[in-house]
Image 1 (cartoon, rainbow, N blue to C red):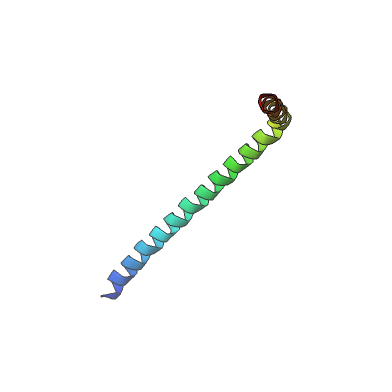
Image 2: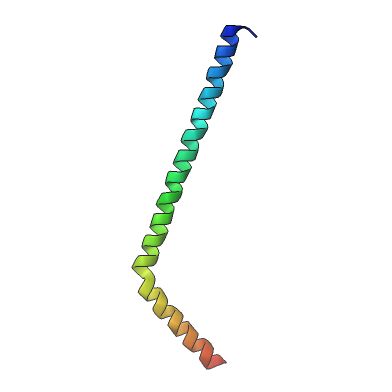
Length: 64
């Protein structure tokens, strides 16, 4: 393989690696955002969810 071909292939592989890194970084950022939104939802709805669970538990006890 000639030096110019080697440099061309090396550059191509570097570009592929850079693109993969950017793709993974974006994926992690999206995952962090979704996790934050999930925890934010739980925090905002915690007491309502707890109340509904208590009601369901009472109904189960009544049926038992």
